Image 1: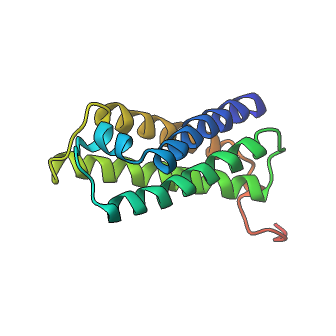
Image 2 (image 1 turned 135 degrees about the horizontal axis):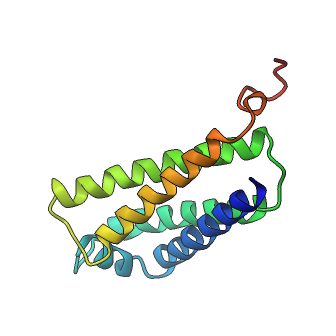
Length: 139
């Protein structure tokens, strides 16, 4: 379990920190690649940079946790990552199917987030049940 969990956290750290830095420094590039947007408003760039900061934080938290033993805190991080990857998958499908905004990286990005959600979900199932409760809770 620990080797698989470490690999997952390193993958999350690498992908999300890189994406976060991209959104912070050059937000128009991810917008073009994901959504096919050639011109982006100042407001969208600002929100993209906020998202970049959040992704960088997820990446750093994942990198810092890569050597941790399974605990309530690590379980919480994994649940948060699962929620994030699931939500991003759904939102990107919506962007392509409903909003008709598609860039060359939209489908690969949807696939990556779906795979990460599945991988994270499988890892969560392997965490002992006593660690799935509230911190300090005795079972």
